Length: 487
Image (cartoon, rainbow, N blue to C red; front, side):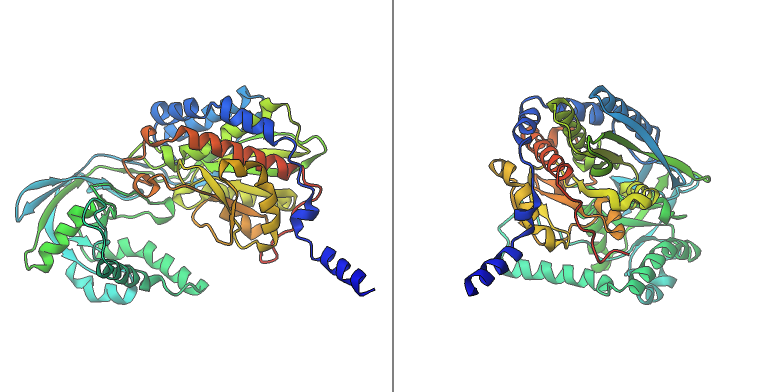
């Protein structure tokens, strides 16, 4: 009897994967399609080199929506564009910035998105270094910004990767600087986060009222690389220009040494007044047995516009497109619908995926899972569980067929900052695959985000992993349990 009880206890403790009925029978043909019949690179080159950067609200973004919908149809899928309310459009204009004191030199500068220009004027004035991270620190510097170009905080600590090897002392110093920068966001309570968000919305209006000429953003990368962001949710009436970390640090050093640098800048931007729609491209392969239930493969199609938006996130979008091709042309028939969604508005705050999740909230319980790819051109290494430890054994089994592609890592981690997050509040299991970095910290949001950085073999591998796991999830006997932490 004791032995029988032990056996029953062991059976009851069997991992979910052992009871899951994962169907791996289609993996071989999908991997063959992804690796040997790939169209991911030719699609990626057209998206990056011909359509180009895809700023949400721009004509290029709509061209990308239309082109991807047509590509899905070419592969035999149904496809449509789903609209949502985006916010006011913004069009980047020319920007010029020049250091005039202590010497004269042009400074490469780009407008932060959804910020105003200089109204046709060239604005000249001194540079002031401040700390505008909190309302309390703003109060210290508010009277010092009138007639000045403002550095809102100390330079970001950047280490020269081609310089001497970092010592322990160097590492400690950089970590201390990063810790100091993070103090302002240490409180992660809902009230504190909401207060910071409102302060950031209000700050440019406060600075404009105080007479500031404009603000400067630290590019925070090495070798002159820039970064870019902005949103119609945070429109700024004040010019705001991104400059390289090298130039930002130069201005800060001059001030620290007792020399006040002076700048003159002119910016031409066009900020819309009326809200506009944007669209998500949605395609699907209809399920044969449970068509009302769906697995979603997703990536964001929009990009920033300093480069051509290839690794962020043309690569993810074209992998999703090629996964659709691989499944459709494999001859396999999934039991559940597999839906492919290329979101817009991700770079402005997950606007497209949030709108999609809200619009489909009534059917959220019929979504098996959402799988997103959005960390560059690198091969998939495995899956981060996003707090769903209960699905760890399942994910290990899902990844068995792609273990030979080095994609079988499963870790207890939360991935932030991309479209799977929009589905979590509805209880939908949502995941963003882990990937090799492949220089993503350099290309991310920078002028270096171009086609030459794409790695063909990695993208074919990622296509295989997404296609295989989507098909397996579509064929599971049951829907995955909802996240009990959801609202």
